[in-house]
Amino acid sequence: MALTIAAFMLLGIVMMNFRSLNFENEEVLDTNEYTQKAIAIGRSLIEEIQEKPFDAVLNTKKIVKLEDLTACGPGSWESYPDNFNDMDDFHRQVFTSPELGDSLTTATPQCLRGTWGYTVRCDVRYVQDSNPTVSSYSRTWSKLVTLVITNEFSDEPVTMSYLATH
Image 1: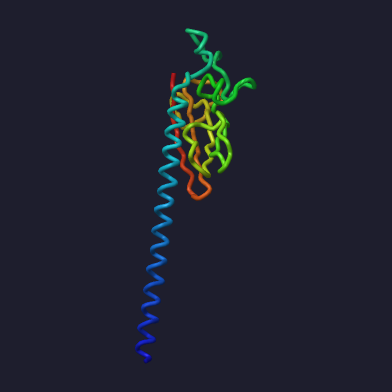
Image 2: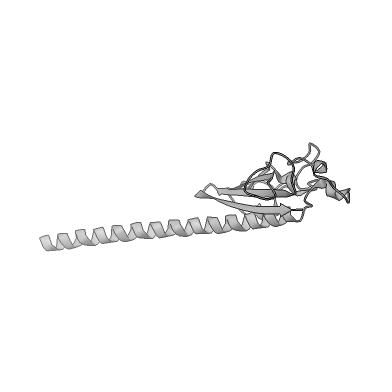
């Protein structure tokens, strides 16, 4: 009798360890899925940003000096996606997945449609031409676009960058 009870206790311990291991594996798989989706969102948004001119002044002038370049960020008249006319208009933009039941608007990037719980924060800044990891306080021929993509179900944000030069 005692041997039977001990066998059932041992079996219970083994099953608890197996269930714990199974839950950990599921958590890893979920994290990988959220990370892969965040990377896909980031790539899609970077592709959209790459389609924009380096600077709005290049839309109207053929010869441009550094002092002609515009500051990073959208003008007061610019809104996504209708009037973003250069890549730095994405500076300080925050895009979120639509909530369940919300109607889609044009202000939701295509890459976030059909997702849930994602937030993308955009940063665009001038960087030193000779060292693009260092921000520049004056205008340069290099801009660094950085996206930080988070998901409410994952603790690890995904950061992606794109260096644009002219």
